[in-house]
Image: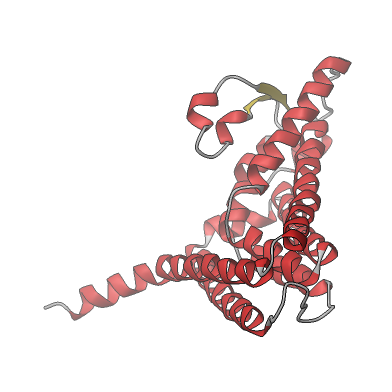
Length: 250
């Protein structure tokens, strides 16, 4: 249980330290949100097919799940995911099936598009629902908030650049900020907001300049979702298949 975090008073920080901590949170949030994956595939597809607002709503769906996981982790409720391996495997399997289903939908959307200006429908909230459900069935997201996320409110330090993909090892130690203050968490969600507003805007701007970009993005999103779904299903079914194989052997 982490109830003690709710009553711990953050240490007073100077203006300069607060600013660097906030910037560190923003950079950390961008580093978490920007890497390619199934969530950004959903955001890209919604932005390309239905516009900036739909892409933003998809990002808000993912961020809503993050906020829920953080609150549940802070209260100690989310630890059930780490304590029950069967539940974790079920979540991985459900997430994999959802990704495959969304990949199928992306393929249908790509096939339905006949021009760069075509849009499959005007339901901007569709992306919110897709991203929210997809994020809520991702146990790895829960584990992140149980460990790193809650740890941001404990006094200590955070090596911000070490979490960046590809360059994290080389950039380690260059930008270290203090943890234990809510401004770091606010900066993290601020970084996520920057990404879910800027990324859809970039997709829409590119779509308006490049002919046939929308179906290409839909196909790429389908590929990312299909591969991610297959990986999730393999991880979920791997132990069961291994057990079945060993049971069949003499």
